[in-house]
Image (cartoon, rainbow, N blue to C red; front, side, top):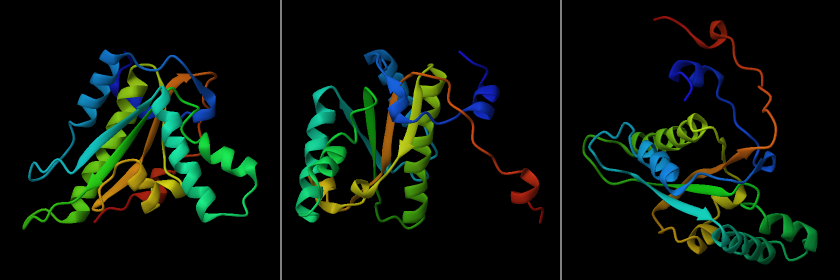
Length: 187
């Protein structure tokens, strides 16, 4: 396992199309999800949950996405519908991070949403620490109520994103990162 600081300094997203199997084992997935649930959560509200898409579930989710896309874009070419159908098919495992808020006198909704984001980042980091490629993505279908309903989300739930996890097929290139001098000020 890599040194934690070095892992955090060098972590990069791996494009789902650059992933293959195998994905995490059942024990590794349990570790990833346990780490995903171990995030700041003021008020102990647990304002997130996870949906696992692996095996045929990825294809079933793709059918939901494709049907909604085709209905909302009746003139779309069949090739475009097929692209939508394959949205979750590249990586062997995709984890949907569902975010919801609860009324609380001391914990605003925004803070609860940030907790869901922290959960997503912990999942990405845990998968990377285990040697897998990981990528946190959204897309039009992450915000479309018809798709979300088709994936089993309740009306008061949002999708913080999909975390794609698999074995990288090649080294991931880093992207330019901001210089600290450009993003840090002192008060």
